[in-house]
Length: 313
Image 1 (cartoon, rainbow, N blue to C red):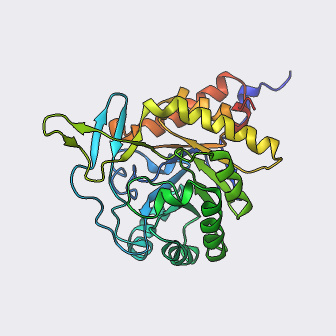
Image 2 (cartoon, rainbow, N blue to C red):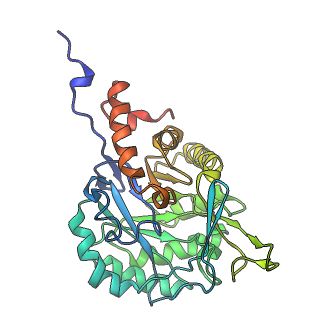
Image 3 (cartoon, rainbow, N blue to C red):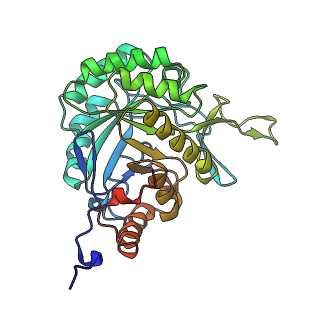
């Protein structure tokens, strides 16, 4: 009797720049804290990976005023990279994260090139598994997204960080607000990126009609949630085509409004090797676990032995 594919061991693992993830579901930066916040709610060891909060060389208090604003099918935020600094993270938060089991990705942010470079050097000597270079945050007045809008500027910062980040894989988080995302992506790859993640939040505003002024002190903030998913999915699809045409093989991690199994399947089918889940964790802390369990069932129901077989590209 021939072997039934359903009886085979399903391989949900993915390899991103030499790092093995037990499954393709990763907690997105800024939405999962640093593990402690959800450790009593879900079994964190089941996740494929965890991205830390955005880390800067020195501590940041974040933006003043209102920081989060709900909008139909989405969330607008202006947190401003509040964090206690990279050294504090490495000494006080990373040890706990490393005990949890998932791959640990440090999200590196900053306001200027020198800050990124020094931060990368510290993380390179730490026990993080991978560094995600954030050149796409729209919620700070300097640095952040400014580095990710232009191919030349993006290449310069990636190249500088690459020289400091010698032993860790370098993942670059791209902005959907770049006028030519494809050019930015290729420039980052040429400058040394090992993988790409997209998309970060879209620039958006909200107006307080009672007080007749913008909701956020910075006026412009970042939109996330289900409302951006179709656009983010399109960008992942298009980037996959660009990389194919350029004959470049590099992993894509897709994100943007993923809130259920079907959303994750769409990104995996569009060419993403893995997905990051963010805003939906706020409304349903079990989202990622439900997606992982759903992927397992989907593979069984469709006689798939590898999670990479989900792709239609």
